[in-house]
Length: 342
Length: 287
Image 1 (cartoon, each protein chain N blue to C red):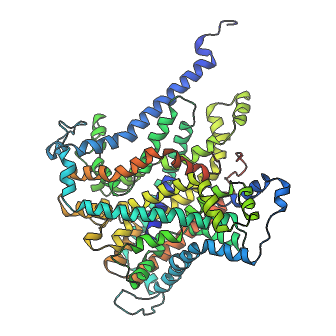
Image 2 (image 1 turned 135 degrees about the vertical axis):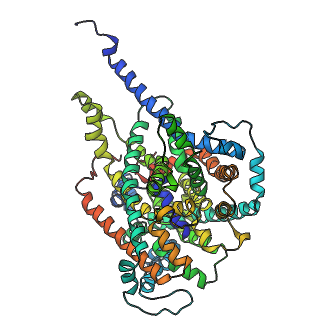
């Protein structure tokens, strides 16, 4: 399941998947349409054996759901009301962990602030960047395939090597970034050593791999017929108008999906901060102490499992509230009929 | 002006200007994206003195290929590499077959509660992984799985929401005639899955395989949490401790980074179109 966390992160920056909410029935309908009527009549009836065999096929996932997701979640909800610390018994202590979190733990607020800062900047910037690049890469220019490869490549690279690379690039005196800034007479900041610049540094690193999200937008753009654009040309629309009134509305379902997944992933930023600071000490001035890093330290450095569980649930509630808000708000700006899905 | 349309007023010219602008932006962007990679390779081939030099050079004076060998010898990297390969291969095999199996159930078998369960799959993708981190750790340590590869491998055999979704979407695009004809002939679902569905969904399976392999290869969190015995370390974890144990030696760190990224880059260039595949399937625009 650790994998899951990493994967999730990877998915959302390498290739999230849109429209998970809408398509289920549509696709079934599409599939049904393609079948000749005579064949459809022969459809088998859902009998008992069919039920049994269905559950047999999905049984691995059901086991995972029970033992790796639902069970652990309920258990951690319970643990969050105890003082469990591995050696102790689980004493029920009511809301004490939550009280401590909100009133006594300054680092909790620091970590929450750092995380919100990161989410607030990285999500819109990476989304906008991905859309922008996708539109560029959708132009009909010879050699475009090579550009697509180049723009996608950084998103494929992940893990510790990338963090090391960026520590080197961001090195204040001998790093690439400040060297290039110096050409333009700009004295670059100390990046990972300056509390003011640590988070922008990580956001910069995220922007480098923006090609992952790009791929989905590109796939969508390529599935669209030219008719709308030709009509707009006849009406004398300029490039910006075409982008604003045709391209962007068409991309909104993917933007919506991208925002949801990348918000969830960004709230869980951990590895970057763990590797790029001294084993998770939170960096200069605690400026890289993200929520999950703080939780990690509580759970696996001082083994305050009860407290860590209450933090986990707090994060879960925040993310759920944001997701529901996103879903509700999406009706105002997401166009599901904008493009044709053929 | 009638009759004398200048070249700069034609559509052709405008397209030419537009393409030039786009091309310039794309080239500039490519430089921005690729220079860090060049920087990694070049730093990995420099001497420590060259790296400390200010301002730094883009090209090493002479290529110190020995950095790669020396860095590899600073720790039991061969062993860690084999460990990582072992885990990644098993996770990949598990992910490909198990997720395909589950996806077949959701795509091709009609059973009670299927749609509800599928919505639950989608919902689990929204659960932050860290919420289950602590209880899972408690579970695995109760089972005595700490310091084994089981916590890294077993979950892969219990399916991943994202892969199930991906494979299901792909299977839905395969006409039902295939499986219905087989059912008429009395084939079981298991046989249909094995003999018909697996071969037909090969492109999607490759996509899942690549993503699973990369995920396992680059996983730091899992090994960090579950492996304490140095002999069991993976490359990611080994490199993390390597960074902490020595004064930062950039020429070694960068050469190790290049080495550890090679399998991913290799897979990317071989299977490039399968990466694109994933995006196409999941955005609903097949092909």
